[in-house]
Image (cartoon, rainbow, N blue to C red; front, side):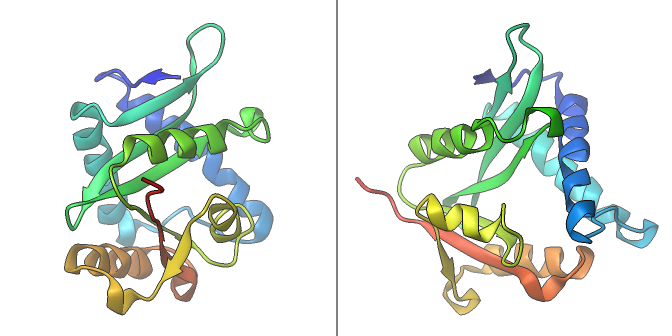
Length: 169
């Protein structure tokens, strides 16, 4: 693993696009229609900001080619796991877990995220990694706003949830 380089935003998008094809296998089309293009543009802008702040870690192969990444930002002043994506051809090798574990180590205090409750590699995976679901009434205003944005743009909005992992320190 290594820090992402400032010029790798297109690599991040390509990795995430590849990883998202997995959703098709569970009948969840995450290719957003044109009316939700602003959501994707805003997400990519957040990734760019996180990249420039040096808070994205890349999983790379032996040739230093990125095959996965984790983006760590802040929401309501708390560490927030913005995105974890691994190329399909590199899945099921422990890279996603290694990226989440790295984010946990880098996050002071609690680590928050949003995810799907009903997809096996989302909420159930994060539960195995020590995260627990949070009632949205317990979330700060930025987290509630982010969850609302996701629910307006992404399919199956009722399945979008917030989770947190409390620090063991």
